[in-house]
Length: 237
Image 1 (tube, rainbow, N blue to C red):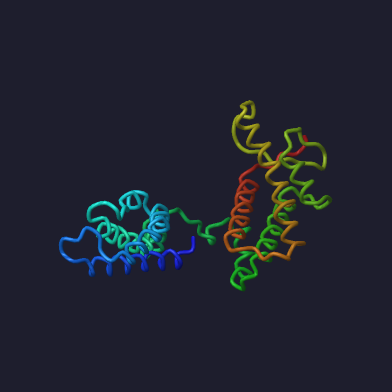
Image 2 (tube, rainbow, N blue to C red; image 1 turned 90 degrees about the vertical axis):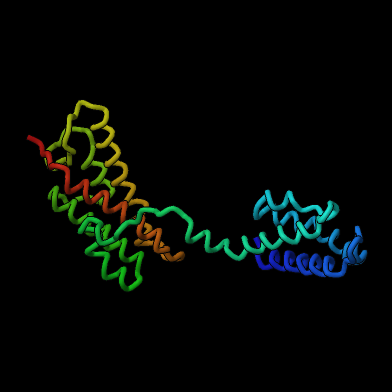
């Protein structure tokens, strides 16, 4: 919405209405006909503006009714008040929302990211975190022979481990659908992290990441890091 234009229209109507009432003589049903005509021309636009601000105010605008101009003047003043305070409402009257503290992300994520984040190199910070998570996964499984995406797909796979291909397993009853869902979900999320976050961070730099985007990527990496640390390594007998 063009708030400056809206404010201008309301202020001009208010000025017209004030001059019209000031020029009316006691006992006159209609005042200055020229001002009255201008009020009629402005009324539809003023009503539309007020309807956007508060429909209940707009419904009270009818300059043809008894004391209609005076009532319209009061409602337009209310509309100007809404316009003046709307930005304050947007910032001060919203419910408190939870926030994520970046320094509470998993250490594998935040420690490598922190110095780059401080230098406002957000994309590099995410890339550094992703590389560290990958190295930790390689170290935990003692596997350095394949790329990170394939490693994730094999690591959380439901198949039994084979020689040279250990698995990561969550705690819990493996016969339940919930355990299998978690294991499968970790498999595809982990692979997706490296495909859609790590690879983009490494190769796409045309559009700078916003702080919010980068934080969300770090938070996703933190979830994966906690899962990797939480899971137990299971090797072939």
